[in-house]
Length: 486
Image (cartoon, rainbow, N blue to C red; front, side, top):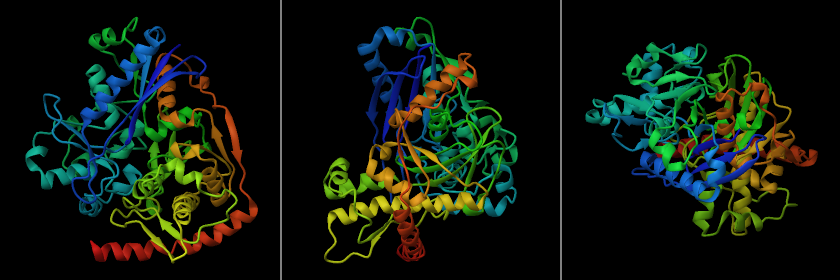
């Protein structure tokens, strides 16, 4: 069976054409731009996602038309939390407010204050990245837009709407809205009412491995499919990455070094632990959940530093000595605020400990270390919630760097496994969900080949444990400074 996985990321959209044995036949991708109309704002035009999907599938048809024509199912993955607002005609009302947008901090405080059942039902703290406070912000600041909202879709659900006309969402992505009763896997009328919304404005819910629709006749003809592919419910990006890794059983774990950073642990039951900003969400497969620690700027930190220095990321990484123990300076990667464990949208990043001898390589290494130390913060938060990791796979763009992967293993103190096709893990997971929706059993999900394991080096782990404790002093200083400056 040939399937298609579509992943709507923040910086790019990817489409993978995948064969029976998870062999990736071909991929296509298009870059996406983020708009920042004000400090702390982050938006995207949904039409960019759709244009990218059209161009990617057109490219695959041109180069691999015969294989594409055989595809029987399409799966979707996407960046979570984005508020895509449609009117009653299905037209987009404003740019999508993205997951890393920090404008709704005041609305989070209001939601927490006015609804005491928030954490118990949703399993999470109210954070500006989540969808519900974004709609509260729109209601307050753009009432003319709010009055026209007929449906709220997450990014991949909007692409589904354009593919087949169905207004459908699945459980993993819906968990990040603060409108889902995560334990019951259903919209919560109380959660919706607390943010001024109603169930009628929500899409239909399905599981990620269920059929959510069928490709339209027009698009079936455009891309030359033999028959209209079914479209799976799909998954939020991290859940899709987990499916791509076969991380669908309790205890499975991975580290994602994408634009954002994630420390993931699959759980057999709903296990909320909001006290330290640990996320508890539904998985994309039935009767399964997960916990996550989330960094808002992981690989995004290196991308920012590359732009500032006028060098490519690969150039900056190539300058580093892999035998060097540690940087002379420090970096806190809070470019867009932070989630786990601080839940602080206002805090901002910073270098510290600079002197006249510091070089570009010192600062590049400090960026990598800062992300790794923030991931250790997330690891400690999960441990406080009862989840201790003994090993994990590593995926995302940052996983391309052996140096960064080894540093991450040293800092976390656990083996990290680099896997095949890690750069398209979300699209691969979406393609796997498509196969499940087309009648394949869950047991057919196999783990991808582990191509390399990074074992923690005891002396480096001990060094970074000490350095991490010193590094943790940056957050309170930067938080105080950000509040004073802001």
